[in-house]
Length: 529
Image 1: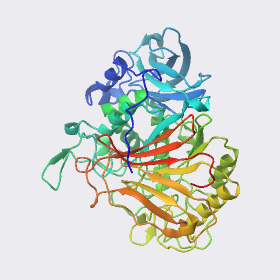
Image 2: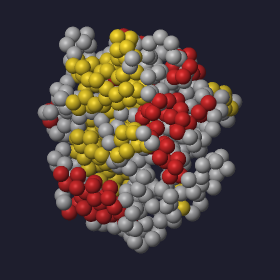
Image 3: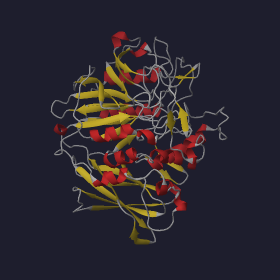
Image 4: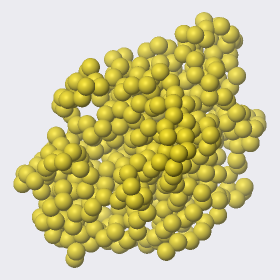
């Protein structure tokens, strides 16, 4: 079934940026914004890449910016758009060690309020020499249940050869999401395609020409730290992305294409495009660039690499906890997935223990398991191996399925309520309901998994289902052939709306263009749905 939903909250709920967002969107895609810092050393520091916020809670948040030269980052926050009264947060010194990027933590924020911020870059040798501030806004998580929560999710950005096309207005789905004015955006991985070079133009099957904005870093697969940085920087050339970042905070995770397609720890590449064959070396460089280009609370760029971890819990008030999983960094090698004993799985033993512990501690009404890969969809890696969890054998759990079975059993026996799985990765949108009466493994409570994507990449046909956990495909919208461009197939994102009064959670699967394709309402307090 489908339904319509208003474009966003009323002006009374939150204010919307006006001139500040227009200024961000008006930044050109070339010129000074695209120039390397070393080529723009005169004048005052500039932040032409915009600002973005991340991992916002009821009392805290992170603000990110990039300078065009060495600078001190200073953030001012205010409850008013006029910045009549401000709180000052002195951030890090931005330099070559972080590619002139930096993140400042904001603490002691009021809950459930619209926060306006401006970032000023100051010359480290003369603090009076400052650049023009960049401004943005975000809403902190509510302290009261009755305020409700609404967020969007999707993933898969600039993939399969489809980059920023100025002829169609760039990454248009970002502007559509911005107009919906959500509390935050959950980016479910494949935030870049470091292994996907872009050509200046591509001829589509119907004869139309797709044009890409290109950069030197997108001309080959990424291997060096600077090439990975350039891939993350590429998406910020799009005015829709910068305007979205200035208004909507994000919770960001990674998957494979931040490093290389279908990678796993310890892998040695047999790919002529790469001079560096050790995936662990590539992953360390990609992780550092990821930490430099996103405001993520558990990752911090320091010296030679990124410290910390990707998996974390973002607590968004009494209604919602978001459990951000990392199904990439701790997995075992891709294989046919038929082993009868597998303690490493796709999460690793330590992350699984962490997830069980945090789920048990959660007092939120709803617990979103933000997965960068689907559970019951068969995602192959070549002709023999499996990239995700399901391996196509409909019987008892084997391989990575054993770890998921252990988790699902734990959720049932601890009577943990309000869990649902959100993911992207497969480049179409669908809703799967999992139930023990349809499953080979039956010691779990029913649950839902929702898939939405891509946000700016190629569309692909639907994957086969594996019935080990009893999935039923209740809805699917996918292309009939592989790698349809965004000119041929709509992009997809999902919406989650939690009502503060009833506690009901509504999922809407959306297609670019304003269409709601599917709607499902879930009731709170149930072990299984």
